Length: 93
Image (cartoon, rainbow, N blue to C red; front, top):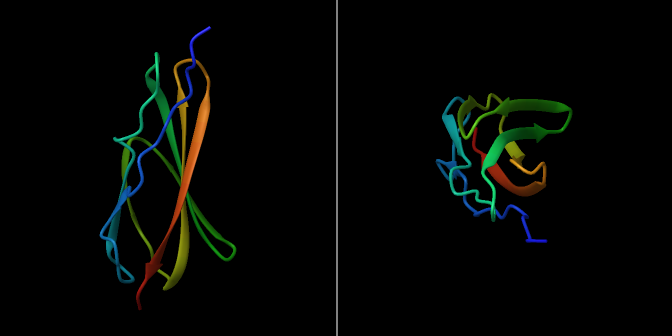
Protein backbone atom coordinates (compact mmCIF):
# COMPACT_ATOMS: atom_id res chain seq x y z
CA UNK A 1 0.00 0.00 0.00
CA UNK A 2 1.53 3.38 -0.98
CA UNK A 3 2.13 6.12 1.54
CA UNK A 4 -0.34 8.94 0.79
CA UNK A 5 0.12 11.55 3.54
CA UNK A 6 -0.07 15.22 2.52
CA UNK A 7 2.92 17.38 3.39
CA UNK A 8 2.87 21.15 3.80
CA UNK A 9 5.25 24.01 3.14
CA UNK A 10 5.92 26.69 5.74
CA UNK A 11 5.41 30.43 5.26
CA UNK A 12 1.88 30.68 4.00
CA UNK A 13 0.79 34.25 4.75
CA UNK A 14 1.70 37.73 3.60
CA UNK A 15 2.58 40.31 4.69
CA UNK A 16 4.89 38.89 7.36
CA UNK A 17 4.25 41.80 9.77
CA UNK A 18 0.74 43.17 9.17
CA UNK A 19 -0.92 46.03 10.98
CA UNK A 20 -4.56 46.21 12.09
CA UNK A 21 -6.73 46.69 9.01
CA UNK A 22 -4.22 45.21 6.54
CA UNK A 23 -5.38 42.41 4.28
CA UNK A 24 -3.67 39.16 5.23
CA UNK A 25 -3.31 36.74 2.32
CA UNK A 26 -3.34 33.08 3.34
CA UNK A 27 -1.90 30.82 0.66
CA UNK A 28 -1.90 27.02 0.83
CA UNK A 29 -0.76 26.47 -2.75
CA UNK A 30 2.52 24.85 -1.66
CA UNK A 31 0.60 22.04 0.02
CA UNK A 32 1.06 18.69 -1.66
CA UNK A 33 0.14 15.04 -1.37
CA UNK A 34 1.75 11.82 -2.53
CA UNK A 35 -0.36 9.81 -5.00
CA UNK A 36 -3.33 12.16 -4.45
CA UNK A 37 -4.61 15.70 -4.97
CA UNK A 38 -5.43 18.24 -2.29
CA UNK A 39 -9.24 18.23 -2.09
CA UNK A 40 -9.84 20.92 0.55
CA UNK A 41 -8.10 23.71 2.43
CA UNK A 42 -9.53 24.82 5.81
CA UNK A 43 -8.13 27.89 7.57
CA UNK A 44 -8.63 28.84 11.22
CA UNK A 45 -7.25 32.13 12.55
CA UNK A 46 -7.64 32.79 16.28
CA UNK A 47 -6.73 35.22 19.05
CA UNK A 48 -8.19 34.89 22.54
CA UNK A 49 -11.91 34.03 22.04
CA UNK A 50 -12.07 35.43 18.49
CA UNK A 51 -12.09 32.86 15.66
CA UNK A 52 -12.13 33.40 11.90
CA UNK A 53 -12.61 30.44 9.55
CA UNK A 54 -12.28 30.26 5.79
CA UNK A 55 -11.88 27.65 3.11
CA UNK A 56 -9.97 27.69 -0.15
CA UNK A 57 -6.42 27.42 -1.42
CA UNK A 58 -5.93 31.19 -1.26
CA UNK A 59 -8.03 33.46 0.95
CA UNK A 60 -7.87 37.05 2.14
CA UNK A 61 -8.89 38.21 5.60
CA UNK A 62 -8.62 41.45 7.57
CA UNK A 63 -7.50 41.23 11.20
CA UNK A 64 -9.11 44.01 13.24
CA UNK A 65 -7.30 43.41 16.52
CA UNK A 66 -3.60 43.74 17.37
CA UNK A 67 -1.74 40.91 19.03
CA UNK A 68 -0.46 37.42 18.33
CA UNK A 69 -2.82 35.44 16.11
CA UNK A 70 -2.59 31.69 15.48
CA UNK A 71 -2.99 30.69 11.83
CA UNK A 72 -3.80 27.02 11.18
CA UNK A 73 -4.20 25.31 7.83
CA UNK A 74 -5.70 21.83 7.57
CA UNK A 75 -5.67 20.14 4.18
CA UNK A 76 -7.50 16.99 3.16
CA UNK A 77 -6.34 15.00 0.16
CA UNK A 78 -8.44 13.05 -2.33
CA UNK A 79 -7.87 9.89 -0.23
CA UNK A 80 -9.39 11.57 2.84
CA UNK A 81 -6.05 11.95 4.64
CA UNK A 82 -5.50 15.17 6.60
CA UNK A 83 -2.45 17.19 7.54
CA UNK A 84 -2.14 20.42 9.52
CA UNK A 85 0.40 23.18 9.87
CA UNK A 86 0.30 26.16 12.22
CA UNK A 87 2.14 29.45 12.58
CA UNK A 88 1.65 32.69 14.45
CA UNK A 89 1.46 36.20 13.07
CA UNK A 90 1.88 39.32 15.19
CA UNK A 91 -0.51 42.06 14.13
CA UNK A 92 0.73 45.55 14.95
CA UNK A 93 -1.62 48.33 16.15
